Length: 415
Image (cartoon, rainbow, N blue to C red; front, side, top):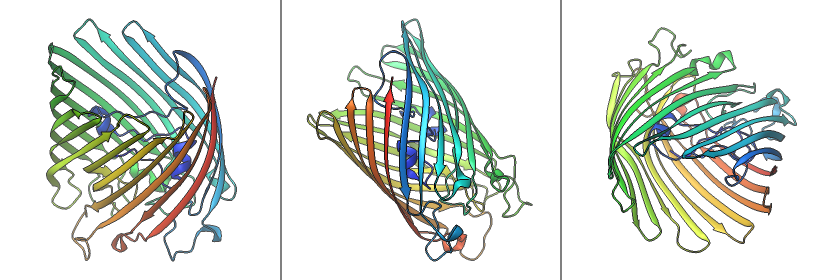
């Protein structure tokens, strides 16, 4: 699904903070993930990075309509400063890309949320001979967890640690066999949120056909195991949220001609989670991405998906998300770029047991974003943006409707 960010201050995360939520399944599925980067891919070598920013959000903690906000107010402004180092190095056929950044975030009113962020990432794209290649990846991210589905005004840092290894062997000029494994671990600062602590391990194998046309098609088999060490406060007597998910999917990368590219990863998924309902669910699961980049200054993207996803809520831990997104970019000049996007996602929750209203556990989230980027100098970038987010709410789960608007401006430099 689209890149997901802590939703209490969406524009702040995109423009200033070092965090990105790396999705385990997408990474193993080979979908390109954009790591937090200060600008376009830097030239080779070691570079220092620095940035400052300011933002304002009119519903910082995502308070539902009609609810009494914390300390009698909903809005707040905050300032961010960050610094780090960026490494981009190629040695023969090996390539190393790494970033190490720290950030400080200071709020004007809700100063109990002040925190120091961490973002350390490293990726090694390796090759041995002409037939064997792959990548190894490690990551550590510390940032604020989202407040979209958790009502609190207390700081709740989320830490993510990940390790990934992927290898592919070329059996034939047009055929490739690939295998990979990844481990993601999430931990939360607040004791009342520790039921979201989890470790996800994924293993997959793929047989890929790559003709000379540049398109490709593959068959992917994957198993994902999730382990939750703590039980939810909803009912501590039930089983944990541990799950096993098996997938058999087709992966398609199709150069449709001209400026159009289609990418799909979709197929059959079976998820077993004993603490919910009948204990298992199965069916179609997948994502389709499309991009259109004609010669000129405009570019377009679109996506649709149907995927399982975790949720940081006290009463449920998993949703089946169905959504769609559209986006457009415009290179207004050599130095100015405009970006716009809109996302709609409907979340269907799985009830642990039957109760009044348990057959209608869903809500929807809508978001939109508009960013303007000015490349003032080759290594100096200024970003200004506006973001909107809204949730329809689920009365059965005790979540209400809200709207939130935020604006931001930032500047960064790469030395």
